[in-house]
Image 1 (cartoon, helix red, strand yellow):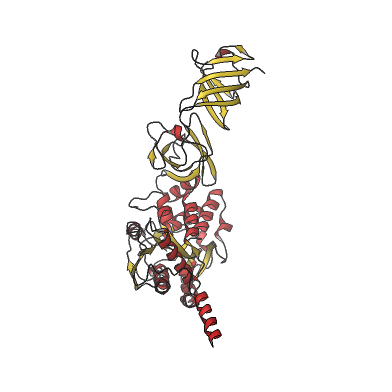
Image 2: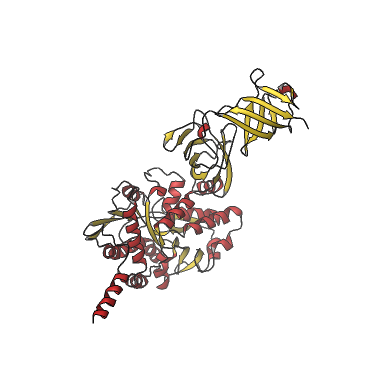
Length: 484
């Protein structure tokens, strides 16, 4: 009997979740839902919350619907909440587009949220009602008169992606925004609208009831796929971007600054819900797909989604008829030139060179005001730049790392890459970075082939040893060169 009890105790010990640290025991958690009751966002949140309450040992979870401004009100409220882990929330992935375009009213930064997890991938689809008189996507493409489509609030994913797809695939769509929850489906049944673009999961019950059909899908396994109808590079870029966004479905986040141990307990509890048989059975019964990811993975996906290159941002801006905004990216410094005025970095998957203005660019290093001369290759930086400026001028660059050494003598061996201003300005390589230095007629000792010389005798292609003091402005102390 003792052996049996011991075995049972060991089994119970193994079955007890290792993540159950007890922070949430007997506490009340508020779950903000940035939309009205009804619809899939509300359904996912309430189902997850009900099971999360048990996993965390919380006294209760209170659901708080905060609709408005395309989920911005709910997201703003969550972002400003106390970072104690007792407020979490969910909102539309359309806010990724809203942040990229710097939409008015946004008081959050998606990349600063404490991400708990995501519940699903969210393939998109254009669904047409069975009473529309249309039977295929080709019918929609051939429509000569505007076809009414429902959409959620301005700035939501459905609003933004309807505008973008209509632009990409040249669809004659008249969009009617403001439908909430499943109001769009009701409007389709009443004949007020012909179709809508939304997550396939949210529209699947409408389809299964025989009320509509998938005209075209973006992501997922449904056919046909929109990419098959994308005839230009621009169209393919838009469809591919929406497809990538569909991997971020039914997100749950907490405010910035939640303590690491509390956030880990939240994440562990959330992932325990995602694998719970009772939760999965209820999700299946409600027609809610489950394809989860942990919060740290979500944080990486969100950062990548926000880190779009100038060309993609221009496509989104043009499709939505808004001004191209300043672009914010996070990248290592790949190269520095022109005394650190020119910075090469990655914007999305594109290598870009931008310019630091001495008077207009705010430079910070490790949270402190800095000079561009403090920057070094390899530093990780958050960069705000203007893609419409001919030099991609930075508005701000905020870096982390060890500042370039101030003072001291530097030696560099390089060929002369270029000469300018009567050979006063010399372009050379310093630590693999294209750099410019100045040859003073009085203060620089110039030699060519071991003999004293003047800067007029220098020529592009000469191999030289340069010495100069470290700093923002480079003036050579010596330039010892050999002729070709």
